Image 1 (spheres, helix red, strand yellow):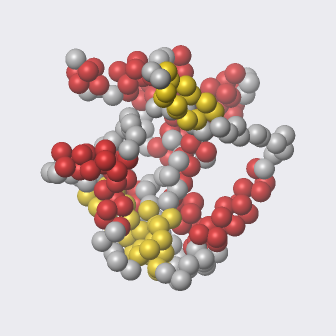
Image 2 (cartoon, helix red, strand yellow):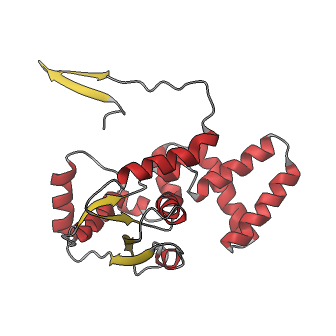
Length: 239
């Protein structure tokens, strides 16, 4: 798979890759502009004469979009779509059900994922994607958009895909935050955040510390070794 902002040229049995764009970062802090930038961006996407909907999960990215729409009363009503699973280990169904909005009429549509048509779905996805993908989360997105397409009146869909990395929405980022506190010798802050995280996640102290150590050690592992540790079925599948 090519690196970001790169292209590959194949000629006379030679392969050449070149980077066509490099993102330059200004030496400024845009933290305080974040809320206004998000609001401005969402307003642009809502400039539409057709019906607008949104994808939503239990994550911080899609909930941020919906929260801003609700808080600023940018729409009177919205229909959201979510991929969920019968197995609660993988599903965010319970989190999505808890989402409450006060200023807009919110209709939730759930698409319960299954493997009944897996072979045909994955073949269609490969044709549609036109590039390698290393996670079946792409398949989940493929199927939820197919569900969205069933609503012939819905022409615009908002999505927060990728913002969990930007806003530290995954659990692993919190463990890195804890490590940073330790490295800066902020022990009281570390203990306070540790117990706060334990409370909101409702997990045992043993499990919390186990996850903390596992995520910290993963920094020094190769990607294949990470799969072996974090996915119990990976090695069996590989062999």
